Amino acid sequence: MSNFDVLVIGAGPGGYVAAIRASQLGLKVGVIEREALGGICLNWGCIPTKALLKSAQVYEYIKHASDYGIKVNGAEADFDGVVKRSRDVAGGMSKGIEFLFRKNKIEKIMGTAQLLSKESVEVTDASGQKKNYTAKHIILATGGRSRELPTMPIDGKKIIGYRQAMVLPSKPKSMVIVGSGAIGVEFAYFYNTMGTKVTIVEFMPRIVPVEDADVSKELEKNFKKAGMDILTNTEVTSVDTSGEGCKVHTKGTNGAAVIECDLVLSAVGVVTNLENLGLEQVGVKTEKGKVLVDDFYRTNIAGVYAIGDIVRGPALAHVASAEGIICVENIAGHHPEALNYGNIPGCTYCSPEIASVGMTEEQAKAAGYEVKVGKFPFAASGKASAAGAKDGFVKVIFDAKYGEWLGAHMIGANVTEMVAEVVVARKLETTGPDIIKAVHPHPTMSEAIMEAAAAAYGEVIHI
Image (cartoon, rainbow, N blue to C red; front, top):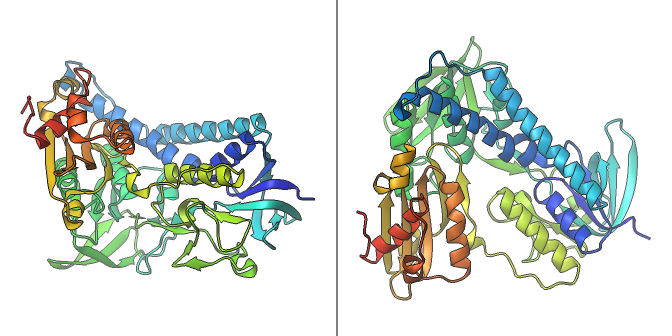
């Protein structure tokens, strides 16, 4: 007899959510985790970084208090205190998962897992003791880690990844950040606000290269205004760490250069945690570092599933959670709808924030659509003016023929909270005219969505 109906390997936002949903559906569930409940997201990613960014935002408010008619003297950032708060927030969230596991009668198994067969897993705990478990269904949710460039291997001291960047013992005077995706620009904002001299090096022609070109341009303008140096179309050829600091050798459109700094942060993406998992032994197929699965996350081996960063699709916490729910609902005999990867929101929590969903203008045109594009600047928003947050805009793209909402791209204060409106509207097949006629509350930042839609149809009022 099996120990479990469902055994999940990995307790990140994919694994723990899958486990809780499976328990809700009446299945006996166990979860194997080698480090801490909540995985990278709760312990070293989504949550603690947002705590750091909030501290940076508060510090920024204080430094600009006079803009709001408030006098503040002698304010300074306590870097140790900022880091401690971040770790405390992460610790509290991880304890929250412990509570949810107890509430849902999920067995927590601490250790490193290896598949022995499609129904059995060997777990080695911290002391080296081994124990075998069996299950009717095994879900792989092992996530990812920092990707390393051959030209700058992470040593954890002078060349660091995101984990080290969250717990540095002191604030560096200068830092080069290689890569300008979400991780790169979030840390760039944090450290720049704390007083570190930040240089961003990006191989692609523009920063946040997966975003709409207008968004990239706006963020670069804001970052440069804040004092950051940005080098695009530039690669790091080597990093010399032999001295007291680092010498970053780069090659770009303007030729070779050397940047001296205290630390280098590698923010060039993630790689999957699939090593030593026993996939080859069991016969689970992979391709380019990803496990191959169908729409319900079944691998080629019956009874073995995979979700999250280790499968196709964007490596985002909310994607992993959605995949986990779909996976276990299908296991339980329900008939879940396959995930629509074309309607996944992406959020970046630098300042100004970035949020997007669907196609960019460039992608929509390349797909053959005739488009209506509307853009509303926050400079024209009463709420944004009152809040002192006039930077940025909302940009929307509609199919000119049928009014289908093809995409939305936002940069500005609190836009990560606003994008869900677009996700739901697109899910419900809401058209441009529908959004224009949906009354939005005033004064709010979210009015900009309605105004942008109106701009696309030549009906905008406030610009």
